[in-house]
Amino acid sequence: TIDALSGVTGTTFPIGTAQEPVNNYTDAVTIATARGLRKLQFHGHYDFPADTYIEDLEIIGEGFQATTLTCISGAVFHHCEFIRTELSGFPTGASGMTHCLLQDLHFADFEDNDEPIYIDDCLIDGTFFLPSAYTGDINLINCSSHALAVGVHAPIFDFNNSSSLAIIRNWSGGIEMHNVTQANQISIDLISGNIILDASVTNGHIHCRGVGTISDSSTLST
Image (cartoon, rainbow, N blue to C red; front, side, top):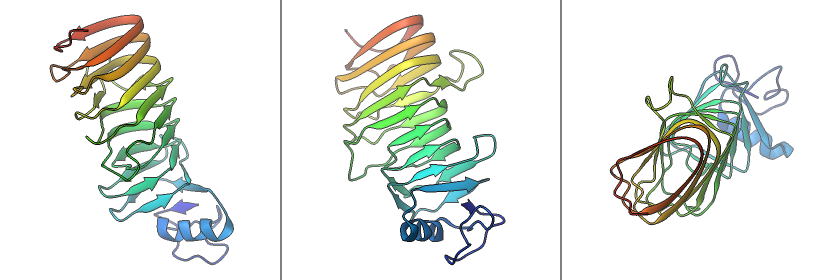
């Protein structure tokens, strides 16, 4: 358990328990590794520094109303999943987000640029930015725009000229596509909402089903 404000430094038991949280992620990972644990439980807000490297752990908050995690550029979360938190910044290497509020996520190039990313039951706001070298699949299941109204400040998925594929199921609200240029395959199933194709969408196959509208400024021929 990690609490940046009221936790303490160290790795000696009972530090790291819910009764005596640790105050930094480095000691928390050391404790988890020594005891064979796979979950880091965060209380309140935490900023992961640029030299962060965490691998194969679940990073869990107390709900996005109570926990805000910010990932500074350079932080790496290799095969990690974020659960029940507000998340922003650069969660490079993360493979999953569940029950989160996602705000302006920017993924940088990493050794596993073909790893799929699974996002389940999340609210999404701002821009979701992919590295240009990314070749994996983006899977959004049961997610929604966090905008105040459909089509107003809709979350942007910026493919950044990558060849990524996207599978979006049961989406609600507005969603905007930018920089789709590599014959990307994108499948969107709407519950209700608005799909916005920016003028930077020039080459791809976007398959849309469900109840909603399309605002098309692209130059797609298909």
